[in-house]
Length: 216
Length: 216
DNA sequence: TACGGATCGTACCGTACGGTACGGTTCTGT
DNA sequence: ACAGAACCGTACCGTACGGTACGATCCGTA
Image (cartoon, rainbow over all chains, first blue to last red):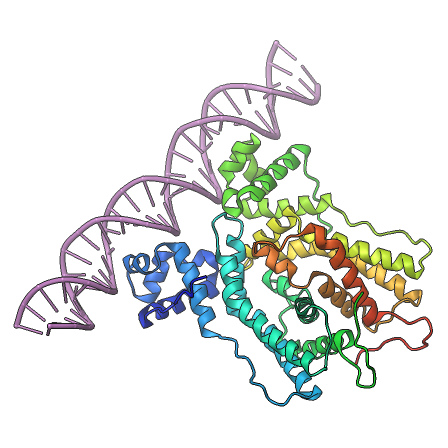
């Protein structure tokens, strides 16, 4: 509820970046308080003073990383079908790029690994700080397309989740599992194009038809 | 390569079930060798004798669990559109049921948490022993539907991944993250129906048309 | 009954981690 | 220039875990 101000000092931000580096290198086990203090040239006492305990440090890492990549919403330029499709493809590319990035994978693995523990809020934090920005951007994009009559849907959430599924498929989980040969950034463009094509088949409005495609 | 025979003795299977129970209750941290020995009334020495080390135990748990739920492939009955659609919906329901189950979530969290470590084969094991069965079943189903002229596709893998994405969307990752309010087994049926509807829009063959729907 | 392998319960070892305490040092505001 | 806060480096503590060792016990077999 409260607009938590994650105003970390530059020093703290540098430490959090070092922590991210350790996490990327060796996973959660490599992110120890002593190791971080050594890598970041700070004292363990400062770590506990700044972040409370280890869980607080992990939460701070997520907040910090999320604050670095704020999702930008494209301003309202004249939107025709070509631009709309381009924006969707760009969104799909960005989504695959983000989900397949080292930092995103490491943080998601961290949060998922902690999800079993009772009081862990890391998963919720990750969704709140990371996913919601993406959702907003896509939601605004879909809404703009609908208002221009380029697509039609009953429920925006449903349409968005379908788009998400068409883009990501099972890639995210397989990347999280570390399956070899799944991360192919050079194929993201093709996947994005195909996904948007399929999305238009499901939700697109034909120019020479008056009725959009309705499900059920 | 070698058809590894996971023939565990009944005693070992009981121990592995106890280990699964501990994992479900308290996550990976709760699954300690001492704790398992106490819970299963066996000695730590036996654990190390049977499974080598802790990683071997985790791998054995995955193999054991996978051996319990062998995916059955439906025999070749007369396949019309109605039956085919029913089979797809059943598959979608089963998929959501499996992915949203406690055991699947716990094992996936375990494997994902270990995915950062270098030598971890848990992710590959989970895919090999768990996912491949599902993939086979779906692949056979799609192929049967294509041969009957009920659907059309260029690449079966692509079609299958699209179906998977339409069914699962982002539910799996969100369930893995432990997001509240995501696990709704009572909604699986609706999701399955909608996904299959959309799949038919994308890959279905109209009765009164000669050309199937081609992508690109 | 006697033997041997498998297993149990427990104790033990080394290590590594989270968290705390403290003296020395640097930074900052006046 | 001086005082106080913030901070660093290091040492320290308690705990918990992975893995090993060993005597006692169960059980199948001859």
